Amino acid sequence: MIKAGIIGGAGYTAGELIRLLINHPETEIIFVNSTSNAGNKITDVHEGLYGECDLVFTDELPLEDIDVLFFCTAHGDTKKFIESHNIPEDLKIIDLSMDYRIASPVHDFIYGLPELNRRATCTAKHVANPGCFATCIQLGLLPLAKHLMLNGDVMVNAITGSTGAGVKPGATSHFSWRNNNMSVYKAFEHQHVPEIRQSLKQLQNSFDSEIDFIPYRGDFPRGIFATLVVKTKVALEEIVRMYEEYYSKDSFVHIVDKNIDLKQVVNTNKCLIHLEKHGDKLLIISCIDNLLKGASGQAVHNMNLMFNLEETVGLRLKPSAF
Image 1: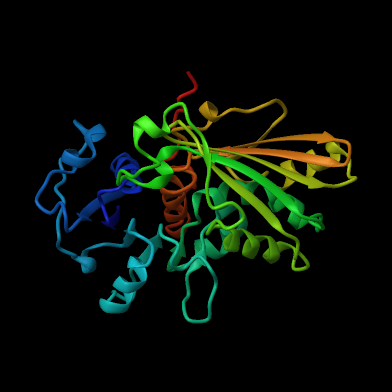
Image 2: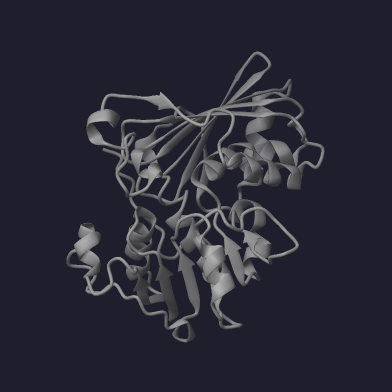
């Protein structure tokens, strides 16, 4: 059994991670650390786990007792923790924050998008889990980058559910504001753009065009629905073939020949992609669950690869669908 620890156990991503790991046949949770909830039951915070989990939050850190450590912490906290604690040499780390997503000679974290870095993830000791928007958008673009087809600006519009803002209530996640409402935020300046660019340049080093990304807040709890537009003269049939070939060995990405919707992916680790051609404009529609494929599900996917398990173990999940 893989023995797991979680730091930062009170948020949405931690709740989903706990749910996945307690139902994972090859994993045992040894501790869930939360200084603000130490001594409280997990179900006092994550009430959806009633009847499934009798664990208690702790402020202890028995790192020597685990095989893998998940960080579900605020951005910046993982780096501070690693720099201030003695980490066992053989302990694997999966960081769900953005602290180590950008490659640097000062750290050895692998960018954990399996559809891009599967081989490197399988042998990695430290993995940086991608951002939710970054995951959805990259999966829509990677096959084009592989074929050196991103030779102009990429236009992206993507809408996310309220859980993307985290568990702490705020002015733009309050029900009375969010319900029946929609708004733009961080237009052209979202923090996930650098990691998207990094991945595209990994496949197409010549890529230097703009990624014009406009994020939207949606009035639903979970999911990301993205539309991407690029220009190309390549026929749709050939593009579909490229996408199907690129993702032929990936269990969670599916190319769909008719329009897609969020309910097909919410509560799953899937990404669905639909392609359309209108003149020389290629429309790519990509959707994921921001908490699963965009966070905790992808973290478990990475864990499976790091421990040489079949990648879908613990991740065959039913979508809400209706």
